[in-house]
Length: 597
Image (cartoon, rainbow, N blue to C red; front, side, top):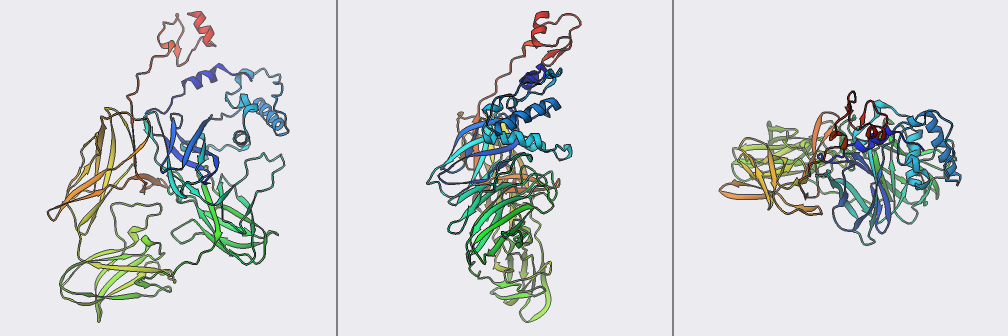
């Protein structure tokens, strides 16, 4: 296929993201089985400058990286030519059809995959066809997910099942980590895209009669994914969706996360079970179903509002349901409107901290705490949500658990009353109460967990402190060796500081974990805690949250070399020839421009 010179100049002048951190918006599939090899689609922004990808923990290796070129909209004759070629490849003929007699061939758009369709594999061809056949809507375009990279990875047979994190690095930047899971169970992915005019392949069968399975998928705009299952008679299955943990907060969408719905149908298409939120505050559903007979069932998943985008990635773990052990708690709001109580003894006058734990341990209870004497009487204290200075977690709920400080005037027996703020209740609405003397302390969180540092230059890192039980002293951030920290003190009465880290050590080729500590003086003693690595995300254009990371990841980068001027900037043009980046306005080609010179 002919290439326009305009397209060549555009590709040559496209800037690499050398000064900004890359952004990994999603990984699809989001998990894989130990002992297998798979190719991941990684989407995001500023990925052109990524040189490699790094997984935390051992057991998984990057084998190959293939960059997916951006797909411009083809002109109509060009699209017809591409479709004809793709249909031929699907029928077993990879030879490019003859170019049409088109006087506008020079206007055809440039894409390196379009000119080499005969060399692409089935996965790459599916990406090309999906782009050609999917209607474009500028209002639904997501610039932060525009770029894609194909990464082939291998998981060792003895790789420890569990969560890892992936980051991309290069060009002086490191992406924030994105979770990825290794499982012992076998996997089944949704089928590759097939254009609607071709025969659609039969959905792969996931047989879970005797073994567990994981289904991997991605919900694109308006789509519903369907999986074919074989279930055994009399067995009770749990089908658990993981989606919010993969992408807890989406900044440019409302409500700011993917909200999946599971529907299970029998072999005749009848609905046998539906699952929405696992709890009112956890949108990832868990569908539990006891199959009355062995046979084929169909599991459907879609977004509650039938939205969809590339980062609506999910997995569904299917296993035999395990009986959950009954949790021993201090109380339970067993039915709506119930007041659950617990008495406790105060042995001497003085201040005490009363802390209720519910949401932080997975209870759906939104607790409200009331304090009275055990003999009754007036309310001595009333506490609802805690206004924390730091909100952390993929679904932050710590602020729902009240913490109160009360100065008891006399010893005796007292009564704690707990109700649900929203008036709900049930057997799993459990809570725990801790009554203790104040223990002043602190926790410190960062707003980024990756530290790409160019030698001799620096990076800004913000730190936030959560003060406990009345502590209000200053907190000092301690940088690792070879890193100098400036403005590293969170002063008394302040909850945040923006520090500046400068690196003057050796340049390494690999990413390495580091530790950052925070220290303070409490009651005349030095208290030192590790800083919790986190990354800041925005939800639905408004709220900001900190998502904890496994560890701080660091890599030193050499100083970038000053780029040389392009050849057309170093020459003097003839009269009436005006320079424009990459070309001359009076010349139609680089060859003609050079001839004029």
